[in-house]
Every structure is written in C-alpha cells, then in structure tokens.
Length: 138
Image (cartoon, rainbow, N blue to C red):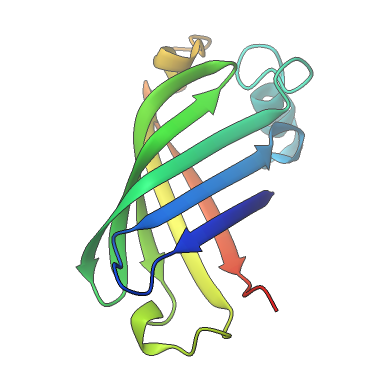
C-alpha cells in the first residue's frame, strides 16, 4: 500500500488523501478464497493491479473518528465512496511528528465495480478495510 495525506492545521476537514492498494496483496481467510478474490471474478489483479481511493473532504465525528468522502477506483471503475475512519489516538491532540495509526472501512456494492460472481455466496455489499499508520514527513 502506498499513499499520501495532506492535512491543514487550520481546518481539520481540509484533508486530501490518495491511497493505492496492490490488489495482488489482498488477503482473505484462506488460500482458496484469497486466490478467488484476486482472480478474474473479483479484483482481477492481473489486469487491474491497483485499488485507488482519493479523498477530498473529512468530516470530524469525534476525537477518534471521522468520515472521509472521495472516489474509489476498482477494476477501472470509479464511484463515490466514504471511508469511516477510526484513529488509535486523537489526531488533534498528538504532536505533528507522531505516527498515527488508523483503520478505515468503506462498504461498497461490489456489482458497481463489475464483481458479479458467486451471488449466492458473496453479498452485494462488501467491506473494504484499510489498516495503516501515517508517518510524518521529516
């Protein structure tokens, strides 16, 4: 995973974020499921190796949580998405040079992104979960 974040110290909602995930590194509960998820019926990692999220508006929900609106691109299809972000520490109460751990979850309709296989086994709505640590630029 690679990404970059720009945060305004004057406006906590003024966040710009770009995350690129390698779909060849997507994990699942077991090897068989992982191969299926990475394969042509789902992420098709061979042809679409990157899942991208570009966020442009952060809404503070509490000291430890917020929502980041943006666009998610999967399999070459871009749709609006919201990441529900939970921080391990309150970001506004940390020194700017401190790493910041977070979990972000977006619930998407997989059919919107061309993933229609196995409708009896996999629901339409799936969660994309990102666990990351933001490191300050030194």
